[in-house]
Amino acid sequence: MLHAGLLRDTKAADPAGDVLDWPARFSALQQSARDPRLRTFYAAGALSGDTPLQHVPLLALDVETTGLNPATDGIVSVGLVPMSLDRIWASQGRHWLVKPRVPLADEAVTFHGITHQQLLQAPDLDELLGELLSIMAGQVMVVHCRDIERQFLDQALRRRIGEGIEFPVIDTMELEARMHRRPLPSWWRRLWQPVPPRLSIRLAASRARYGLPRYRLHHALSDSLASAELLQAQVAHRFGPQTPLRDLWH
Image (tube, rainbow, N blue to C red; front, side, top):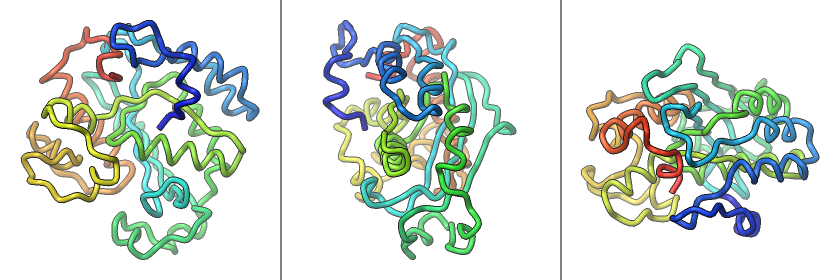
């Protein structure tokens, strides 16, 4: 989640009043970033909220973690899948195991299936950060629960390079909550609070509404693919290729 203090000065003159001027924000961040990998990432720029969805380069993103607190837990895997509104390049998807700097709890192993043994030879996130950011550069991220991906990546970079990261996302969970016309609960309640299947906005339940197949849950690559397919279905049913990007950011 973006920091309120950083958002305050860069709100766009948008009728909704709450859409960030991402091109201006990226320009400012490029000037202030100290790490050269971050400067290169921000130099690629960000799209205006006026951009029609059919012209938006999209990249589905998912991370698996040691727990649910970005301040104390770490990332153990990252998955990326490039996509557009009518195509998903699954063969170009990327998946990394990442050695966390905090202990991996047994409960987390049960959740995502990544074991201590698998992480012994995994690189630290800092080792693949340049490659990761080069793939993300110029793309709009597609995630299911933006507070997970943005906060965990932000905190992971702060611990490693002393500065965080900001980037725009389309959150398929938020879109599903909006479509069902009910308030979006706090992010941890979205993951853990039991709700009837017909009201659930978890990834599997959301996909089921559109007749999408079941995938293995809590694997960063398959969850990225699942989020990509879900966004395509949501846009086909509720929006359209000419819908401006800001309507999904709102």
